[in-house]
Image (cartoon, rainbow, N blue to C red; front, side):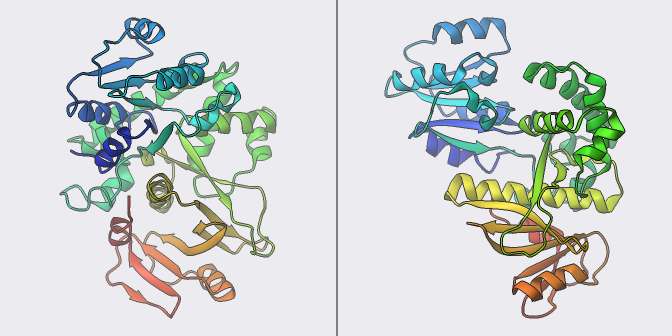
Length: 373
């Protein structure tokens, strides 16, 4: 199945390096090898493999190589300095594709600048917008299995769950320990488990710290690691021009919808969050827009699940509801008070309609399928 970003990545490879980043097993290696089929002399090297690591360190690929794919390069000491040297001295016919399952901004401490040398492409799990013209565009499938290719396309729910068990074990035992030395792996596992149960709710670092028996600073560090490895992402409250908004507490969502321990409502909200983030990344990666995803909440508890802002100005409000067509009172409040367009998403809306000049009720599959990715 061709990923929607393939053509854009191939276009950018003709101009600069491309960094293809995203969660573990979201399809980065598969996509890189699909792109390699369009080159005459492509070479794939994975830093985790000893033989490949030696070739990387010696820059021993053939002069005729026209596409160099470097996987998990961020695990190499001083990798930024290395790739900068490779790019600055490469032959004109060589394209470079770097893939990895960790955020580039997690490695800024290396002190080496790659400014002007690369484009970033975020590869996230499948979303309705990517599969809208396929037989797989089923909202319940996205909610229960998540959008990661292997469990999503698995023939049975049992096969999907077997994948997820191995996936979680791999995250804890391999990726996290590779990223940073964790002295108390049990505490990290407990933090992850608690986050799985609190999807969609503002997170208190001090409360989690009390539950786990560690300091709030340690909880914050663990969450930053989980975020850097594309396991979770934070949605922070929007504060500009919104009176009395909470200033600190983020909400946590999982890239893998199947990791959410909650009811259908929580799983539905998490799925919407992933789809909106994919849309945000698309506008940032391909249109160069400063677009961010937030939520709204006052100290009195009025809350809207999501708001999309561009250049610190809210474009629209979005509320995710599993099975009610009654327009949320907080959505009414914020939309009316700040004159903002608003959408309430229903998992399966019998009909879509405009509530008033600002608020619209939409079917989730149709709305999410229309997002540009």
